[in-house]
Length: 156
Length: 321
Ligand SMILES: [Zn+2]
Ligand SMILES: [Zn+2]
Image (tube, rainbow over the protein chains, first blue to last red):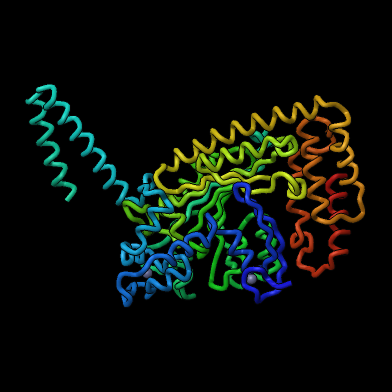
């Protein structure tokens, strides 16, 4: 029996997959089985969404991995981290639809986590300032404003 | 005593990370792979490295069966290596440059997460990890963007499957942002009544919030499963007699297919859980699961199906005697 995905290799893995109630049966070759098993989410989903998107400029290529958008569409995966900024505009609608427009909120590499922490602190100070002005504590508000200016200068 | 081992077989936390300046796996060359392996190895202290680049496919399959690596990793044609320390395993040059995972027996979300963070901290401070303020960790597949974390729990839910209650739980789970993998309804016995529940969202929630939400859901399911088991036991000898008989068949057979094994395994495990099978514990029973998988069983030999089924029965008998 041939692999039901690539139709090239001999199938050696038979399995039933049940994702949220939908049962599918597969007969796959080892390579396709490995692929099918691994994605965090159904792999084809993203590829099929991408095929509906049209690239803005045809000849744009990523300088790091040399992918163009048609290749990304075909694979359903980007070529490198930089692709996310090179093709940001093209990828945006799909990323928003997969992740429901949410923004990352969580762990971050060292430099970023400090930057984020600083931003959070700044945000908190600004809230305090607003509260101080509302309650007419002008002396405290002036101190807070100076502190905010100082922090903003540090961040830049 | 392993926490909730009667219902939860194992807990897993997995992070996907990539190093800036290198293309993702599909565009990577062998030299870059070796550089990446070296870099990851340099920032992770005390890990033991297994280079899987030229490993015999049968041996690699044994690693898959023991849950040490993913099936995709086993067939990778580029240089790739496994770094291990305790319950932490790091696959280097997988779909993402780095797949860090911690697997623990039983229901151990918090400790598994804490342990994964220790190694992840080393990666995040020692390497230039691909990251974007809004998109989070940049991963090969855009579906994993954000925290790029998959938290999952492998559950043994025979009573909920048998009583049909699982169906209702499943539909609620997907609405809550969780994915459940496994067969319920017809054919569930052949899969050992094993269900993997994991987060389907990676963007927007912090890792801690994701883990705690999954923990809440799993805790509730554990309660339901135990209640359903009590009802099976209360139904009397006719209800639990098949579980005891299954132990007899498991122990005394001379040949056994893997499908039959899984069905018996599930019955015996339920028997242990409700206290009608006392000759065996979870540790031995669960260790059988890996021991009788095709490649592990063959120990590098090429066995025919008949030879394998015979050897499977022998291994089981030996372990149960
Ligand atoms: Zn195939
Ligand atoms: Zn690129």
